[in-house]
Image (cartoon, rainbow, N blue to C red; front, side, top):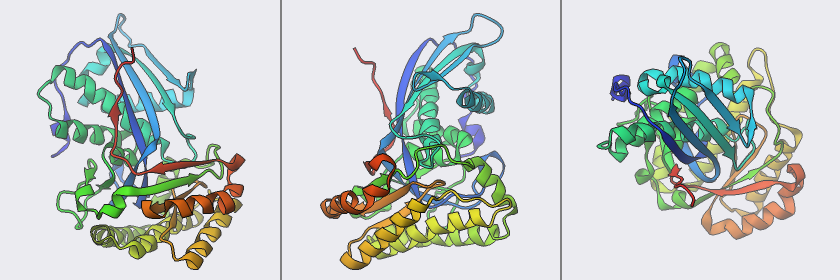
Length: 360
């Protein structure tokens, strides 16, 4: 499929509200560096989460004036920075939804986890909003298949945030063209859960909140800095190879291999931040303390746990369901003390967005 396949040419009038929730995701092989139009420099593979979600409602009414009215609320309050970003997104995708320009829009959104702190809140928010938009299109195009619905939602979400393309499926998703998977492409994510061993379909992700505040450098700025990073080309080639290797690991259930790639990818991304110009550091002292505790615990117990990081200081602790009780005790005794206000999120892999039915 190409971009033209996602253009809906009919100019329709709509009136109503739709609501969707969409999860964050945690990349195992990271997406860090992009071309124009949110095309990734390398493929990536992620696990979709289930509890770290964004809930979004979109209201459309035929506009009464020449200029469309737009209202955006995040967690009950007007957020100018989010509103500006969302307007830019809507302008970019207008050709795929011509009806947008003839309607007044109201968007209300909230998260179950901290935003802008390195837990991929842009992924969940853009995935939820994209699902809402495609749902409105489906009101007119009632023959739309579920397969097309989620492909277009992933395609549209990618335009707002590259990693959002992976939040439309679960629990295991690939995005970006790769020799590892025949149908992979740069335009939308693809569900590869049927390629994964059962152990990865019941994985846990405990997110240790080291710092809930907004990070100093946004992911968009980080991607931009990769364009002149002296190690960028080597990084992209390593990521491509890691995707190929990870596909085999996912199929076989090789936890040792999974741990090796997961931790290597996390540390590599943050080392690239250190070698950017200007350079920057997103990890905090307690991030390093937690990582040290995790590796010590794994060495002592031989339990299959590992860490990863997104573009922030918060630590994702990944482990299979069959060791959850032991890991839970470890978190409470050893790791919780390093978390902001002892805060962490017990999450697990999930299956992607859900439509929120109107509550009576």
